[in-house]
Structures are given as C-alpha cells and as structure tokens.
Image (cartoon, rainbow, N blue to C red; front, side, top):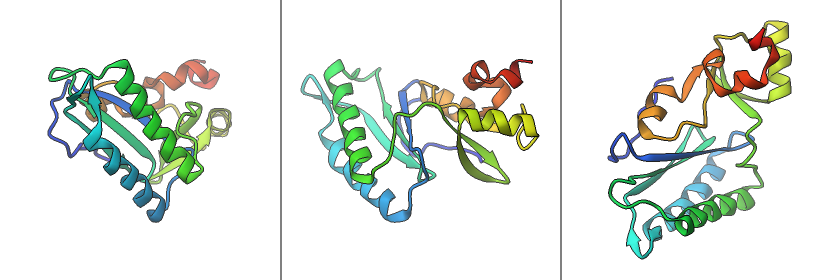
Length: 166
C-alpha cells in the first residue's frame, strides 16, 4: 500500500489526520468531498489564504495539509477546519475523533478494530508485531509519506498494547 499525496505542497507541510470509525461507501465519500470542496477555498488565517489541501484516502482518512512556511494556520483557522470535520462527522453519522480505533492491513485490505480487539488478535496470532498499522499521529507530509503505514511494533500503538511490550 504505497502512499503518494497528490497535492503540490512541500514535504514540511503540516498534516492532521482524521480517521473514520468505519469505511465510507462511495455516496458517503462524495458527501464528505462536497463538504471539503465547499470549505477549502474559503479556509483563511487572519484573512490570508492558506496554501492547503484536504484529501480523502481509502474512504477512511481525511488528511488536512497546510504549508506553514507560506502562511501558518492560526488557532481560529484550525478551529474552523475542525468545524468542517465535525460537519462531515454529523452529516455521515461517523466518529472522526476516536483515536483508539486501529486501522491495519490484513490480506492487502484495510481493516478496523478497537484497541482491545487488536490486543486479542495479537494474543490469538491473527496479527503480530509486524502487522502494518496506520500511524495517524504523523504531523508532516514527509512523515505521512514515510511513516504513516508502519509495523505496529514501530507505532505509537505499542505503548497501549501489553503483548507488543512483552
């Protein structure tokens, strides 16, 4: 699952990742994209346009990019982007703020489960320390490209998974 962002922003661009608690169907993805398309042209910081992009990946992740070198998003502009995420969340009846749902790769497909379920899968051998998980805490485009999909043993999740720590 190689990842290549389609936007032209520099590698040091700031990134925020919002993961849905379930994979969206095509109609839901279209609705989310409509909300994004209505929001993005008007996203400003202190009246100045932001060099930014918002991408929907795998019908699961909304990734917000901002080139802070050109114009850094202010607290208010970040709040407005969170408002847009909440609008998508409300329109689709999904949760985009649940950090304890793990997305991982199983048989070439993305699967989701709660952290405690992932721990059970580790214990049963269904997944292991080398299972690829999405590290949604990456904070730059460069890290997104190189460290978004990593073995669970190299992700922040391992701190909460006793089986990995053993």
